[in-house]
Image (cartoon, rainbow, N blue to C red; front, side, top):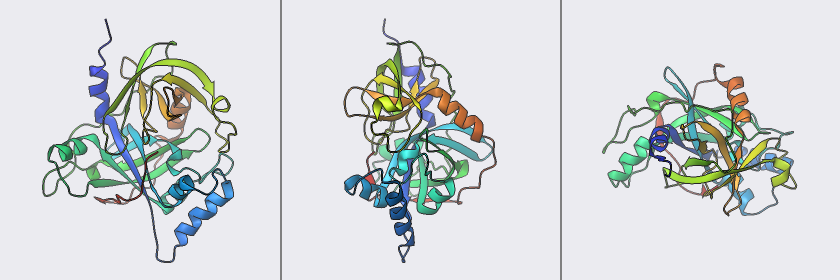
Length: 293
């Protein structure tokens, strides 16, 4: 009898966030030049569409809640949301990302009500701030005020009063060929569900040659496809526990997930340290030049 994935799915979807990063522009184009200097320094991508997206696009990713304390919610996603601006030996700092990008998040409850209302208004995102990064293991932690995470209502809407529970982490990856579930949020496609089977454990050098970003992490190969914009999505076992986070795929039937020990170590090192507060308030976000990756 096939396993019923509905309970883990219904539990996890409350914790999934859309993470949206808009390059901050100034009249003197100082910040645009700073982004270009960073890209020129690391040289992970030759000039072309992908580099243009890194400099001028609005990158998106999937994130999920890992901690709630008082009015603060912490969300983890991938560092390569700001792709081609760093290497492990030349990392970006949270302060640099916050200076160069406006970071915003949206919860699934808002998106569901927005879609049901068939609204054509601009979505209202919560302002957020990057508080920790590990460029070697492709991990980024952002925080927002829960009171700024919006609930949708025609003509406005206050804070979302639905739950956003932290997802439970699991330190083990399960058995080869065991089923697992990924829940992601590519642009305009919330609650994208994929079910696959655990494959081999790989090193980053098995998958990426040359490894220009100098990633240093173990990856779990899973027999499932993944869409652009799904990076950062959690991989769940049958108990609904997270044991991986999507690093990327190759457009085929395999996807590669950051192994849980990297995620757990990163969160142990960074959850609980008082971060600088995110900018107050919420507002509509840039909808142009979405980077679908």
